[in-house]
Image (cartoon, rainbow, N blue to C red; front, side, top):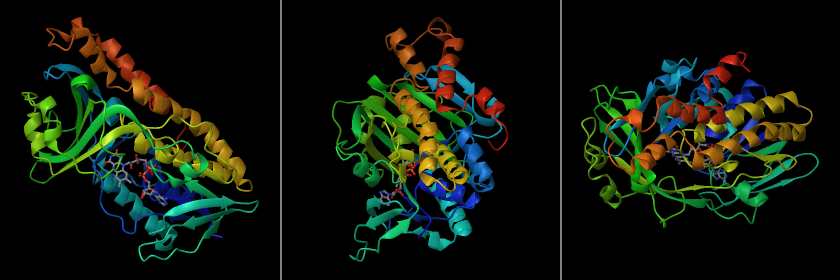
Length: 417
Ligand SMILES: Cc1cc2nc3c(=O)[nH]c(=O)nc-3n(C[C@H](O)[C@H](O)[C@H](O)COP(=O)(O)OP(=O)(O)OC[C@H]3O[C@@H](n4cnc5c(N)ncnc54)[C@H](O)[C@@H]3O)c2cc1C
């Protein structure tokens, strides 16, 4: 019996392993990849999830590889400034917002997990095919590994499906659901080594979806004063080319028509994008929220449980919050793992359902939708005549409440809760 079986060693699975270890609960992580390579581009961790990672003692490792954004800036597609507000510690939070390369986040989690749990607790080249269960535990079966042989099945007390957006366990539990659904927007992402933009620690949004919207933020600082700038361009299109593959290469010229004129006094967007080291393309997809994640000794976590469109910087952070909650419920109900999984679901399913639905319709970016609609997508003379600062703060404040990181809620929470 291998304790708790964590299926998938991504951000959620490794955080869960670290939280379980902190609570003295043994686990084994089963990861499909035969080797873990530095893949992906930028991710953000908001202050509520940063607090959980700090509680795991990861703050120094993450501080060394991230940029802590201090402000959010919003612009229309003519480069006119619409809104600015403070982020992270600059906004009064006890913990920063972290902007970093997904590979750096994953590497920090993996190093800590290997050191604390032992290298044997993280098994690579173990793609889970099926999970069975009986009164005493679960049995996890695998597909053939890289050498063509099928690794022996493993027994555990419970199995957690943290196997990402194309989760095998979710497909087993919901066989008729089908692939994640296209939401009508295509997306290109990339990273460019570039001089600091604005104050060098700005999470910047430009434009609106009909004519294209870009989000950009720095994720690494270099000694020569340049930064690694992460950018995401998103535009409404009826068709898309592929399922969401985190590593599908993209072509800058495919979206250049939308941004050709985005040459602003604070950033030459076409030049920055053309200088990219990496360009990836994938469709914006998500799934409708599920009615339940927990089936006896099996449950889902992270993207497997609640794949969401990546707006609002919440994908990785919500998996971190899931992990903390689940590890604590498993500690509290040590003799009754089924009750623990149900208690976890009762907290995290409604909370993440709200985030999935709000990311579709009302992320912080809708400030730019309002400006787009009210100006008829034309330059404005004075932003105050288009939209008040109070209205904009109400939009971003509403999102913070839905995603669980409004300042008042976090300040009111007792330390370690
Ligand atoms: C390679 C990669 C690159 C990414 N790049 C970005 C990015 O640039 N920006 C961004 O915002 N988000 C990115 N993400 C997604 C982001 O990490 C997640 O949205 C978020 O962190 C939630 O984490 P998760 O653990 O639920 O899922 P993930 O971090 O996606 O982890 C899922 C893990 O499960 C493994 N797995 C899948 N199927 C099986 C199986 N059957 N058996 C065992 N293991 C399995 C995968 O290999 C992966 O390691 C990326 C994910 C991956 C896997």
